[in-house]
Length: 365
Image 1 (cartoon, rainbow, N blue to C red):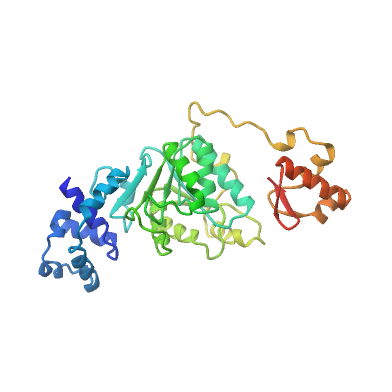
Image 2: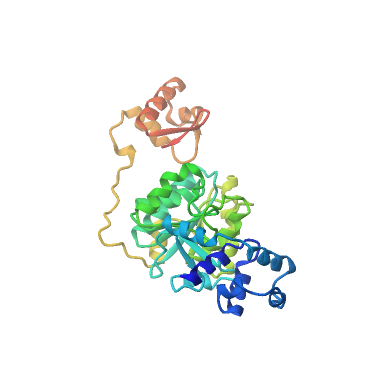
């Protein structure tokens, strides 16, 4: 237990790369020995810069880390340093493994296949639909879904996994006790209640600073066997995860999209560069030779266009899809009067079949 507390102290030192802290631990044989290292001995560690040595010297003056460790345990947060037998082997293989993981809930199962689902925060309904569809289908076939719980595609990936009654794990750019974005508190709770986990390399209480997010992407890809990019612009942060995944030897797949959609630009380019193409969950399941989990019911075919609608409502509904259409175009395609289309859209909205995504632009809900 005493060594564990010193591990907690060393894990909490920000400003020194995780890999360098691991190397320092190896040289000194224990985290406790690092804490009691003399300045002259620290100066002999040639892999550390002068700035990093000063950071460690300042950290040695810190008090109260025993209390911090106790508070963490009281919150039900597990602490898993890189030297622990529970630390994921797949992370030890990457170039800069996190020194430690803080975990609420469970860890991904090393025996299961794992897929990261990432993409744009400001995604389209098209991206949302396929993030859910792929995550749900993979979860139903025993694949753990990894993502970052961000707005947009990340959140949809987690939701799809929950719908598929599978395990899903969120890697945060904050402490595991800090839900970000705040509106995902329901998702945060659902992940834990369904047996998944919330992970971070940052100490509890760490705010979601912007600089934390690029670094956490290496953990998302590092925990995964494959990375699925559902929507990404030319300069999307998801492409950072792709670069890290390729460096780590992970497979990369991308969802193709319209050539005139800026949010599909990054995905289409990835496919042109050789990424796997995501045409349907069924094709991916067949490629990966997955078998459906026992006890998982077949999804019910309950598309809302099969429910009882008036004939003209069915006509308008059938005209809509995942990409927004204006009233004029709907009227032209259905050969109905614009005033009739307007009334039908209002009726369909009230029944939950149709969604207005911007002024006079409609999609299937």
